[in-house]
Length: 278
Image 1 (cartoon, helix red, strand yellow):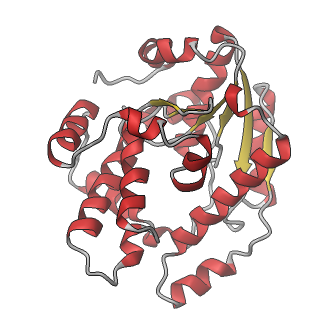
Image 2 (tube, rainbow, N blue to C red):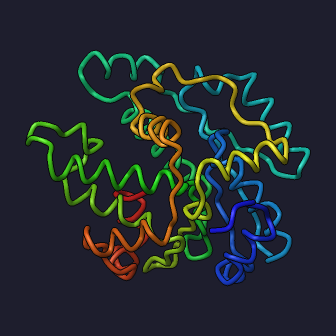
């Protein structure tokens, strides 16, 4: 894919999908990181062009990363752009992550679980019409590659007691969660839609947008960052100067990993998707 990610190129690539959002509500998952910030940047511009509204729940976990000061700083920027970040304050303490580490459990598993709880609570509290809802997820191409490598290593080579390698899920659950990510747009039975607008792009391209547009992102590093598989893989990609091509990754998954057709994921239905694959 040609380098130089910008709104016009992104809009052209996704125009057919974005046209289907007319009169719908796009729920853009916001964490303050580079991926979710670029995602919100593009979605905010396309909302006017394609006639949909945006709601942006903000994940406040872990608390030592998204402090009160950080949440205020990020919210001010987006408020000036006409978007209200609806921070979801999770009651769970960061100590859960420290305790998990002592018990040999990935602190990232605790973090992801708590964030998913926030999403579930948000959806229930807002009583949103699932048939008119599009959940926008910030997976990048590096996320796609890393999840695939993690699945291969955990599923093919891990011992039976290596459950943390599969993020606390069994092989079939991890298979479904991993490979639904390959499809940029899914329409579930029951009406829910899932949009992944960044899976064609490498981290370098996403960071270029952050720098060029001066978009603020979180300044506090997570103290558990070295335990995050995504970060460990990214360090390797950076160190070896790797970039990826979506079509090559897709072809590999089809040929070597048995990537199922998108219909398999669509047939799971909205409730099952939210429960097992979000």
